[in-house]
Amino acid sequence: MTPEFDVIIVGSGPAGTSAAYPLVQAGLRVLMVDAASTAAPLSPPQGDYLSNRANDHQQWKWMIGDMFHALNNMDAVSPKLKTPTHRQTFENFNKANGLETENFISVGSLATGGLSNAWGCGVARFPAEDFAELDIYVDLEKSYEIVSRRIGISGNEPDDLSNYFGVDKWSQPSLPIDQLHQQLLTKYNKHRASLPQLGFQMGRSRIAALSQDMDERKACDLSGNCLWGCHNQALYSSEQEISKLKLYPGFSHVSGILVDAISKYADTWTISSSQSARRFSAKRLLLAAGTLASTKLTLKYLQHTAPVALQASPTAAFLLWLPRMLGAKRVPSLGLGQLSFALKLASNVTAFGSTFSTTGLPMSEFVSRVPLSKRYSVDIMANLLSSCVVGNVFLPGHLSKHSVSMVGNEVLQIKGAEHPDTHMLMKQTETLLRKAYWRMGAILMPMSFTVGKPGADIHYAATLPMRSTPEPVTTNRLGEVSGLKGLHIVDGACLPKLTEKSHTLTIMANADRISRALATPPLE
Image (cartoon, rainbow, N blue to C red; front, top):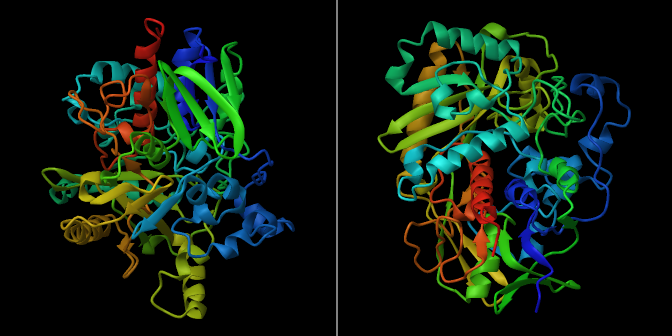
């Protein structure tokens, strides 16, 4: 059988599009498939958030949704999952992929562009020591630069986190921060000498959001609509890449194909879907469907039923009150991370997090965190919220004990389990953050520090990790599954480990690195 394509890529998220570029630029025939619906998504609101809340008589459409989407998802772990404009990003993922969970929150996307349609846009380089065994970092660093310049990153001001993030030399200038974050930064700079004693460092967030126009995308206008969708396309989404990839004659994109099986005959890989009669074949198959979906396809093909380790980042959220800013006027501002921190907890454990404006977040996200009835919580938050910022924190993935395993031929079971050190480290994190922010004139609100359920971070990785000497159910330096020539994992599933840092940029850079190696010399 003669394959129709040189390469098939399953998934159109950040990993899939990053893997596609080197291949089509080398003149190869590349097919990208995803399971996206053909229905048009709800458009993001125009104008700024505060003006829309005050004047838009149709705001219920994007705040609640025609089918009461927000109200039906009040228990969702993230406000993104409640947003009607992102309904198509998240819907039906678990059911369509046959995922069953136990003590674990599983989130993914079937949409074109995947989770990058509704992500926090945080970016960072993983340190070289995380890849020391693989001897790939020279090539990976080149790919970090290629991807960073392509997607557009803001945040290149020299500060205490410049080396930690490692992306400044490829970035646009930082976006403006609001007056609350400016107050925190001023206080931090004043107390810099004492804060390192707590292991605390702070700086500007590095985010995949434009501060300067790039091609057809416009710079962020600080509208505060980041949660609902950016009408300027300032926030990077890999969906923006599809039209550019289609300019290459060898590139094809097909939506509406939920790949649920892969097979191999001789040297040809074939993908198929039980919901479609269409089948496609290629010399090589790159899985970029997201860690959970790619893992299921691989384990199903291998008929591997034993549990496989899954890493995720233990996470928590908290609320900071700045008393000196009480009564501050609410103004439109960036809805993504404005300041970030790194907190050293132990020799091998660093916590990472960012703080965000509360403008652009519904009141319902905060009243449940006040230890009073909803009636009084609303009154308190109405008066305090303009002088508050909200924060998150992530710990490294090795502090998780999750696993995935095939049950029968169609179900991937995900079991969440807490590492014995996680609870203690979260308590330590809360204590140190309370002390650090107190020195900056901010109060970590009592009972607001809330540890997320396993999987709530939506950072999943390392189920099929790259190894210098691959063993069964691992991959080699090029993400090629051990014993399966031509089958490559290019998303988070092949990362050797998950750090506390935002991991999307590393997934993209690694996918780019793998494809460059496959395309040079051209595939045989």
